Length: 165
Image (cartoon, rainbow, N blue to C red; front, side, top):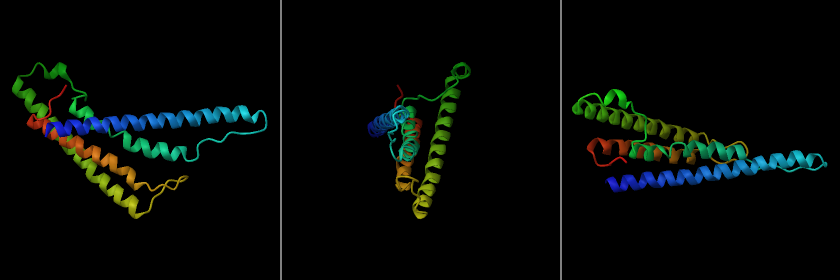
């Protein structure tokens, strides 16, 4: 099971990185168009930016932001206060670690649960973006999948199945 979770976390992080690269490329292109437009206006012409730029960036970032959480959890890349914890007995440290992992899994599952309702509401309302008219609800799917994977990795870490780096 640990290999599947680890691989899924890697894939989510790689996809998230690819989507971030697309966001950067689209943003750079739109910024260049803005600068070229200012220059072209001096000669009486113009250069248009990318139509729907804001729609794309808003939808893409909403999913990609969550896609790194499972990888971070699998690598124990979250914040911990070791100065205090390292002075406690090993048994207390294990209890605290497992308690936080359980809380993390519960929070991730809670977020996934409510995101499903957000997806259903956006779908039922036929919510679309303002410029591109893209439906909003499919962009909930990567976030929901990320939250579920995050919860599963935290639960696997409680059982000791997913080693941290």
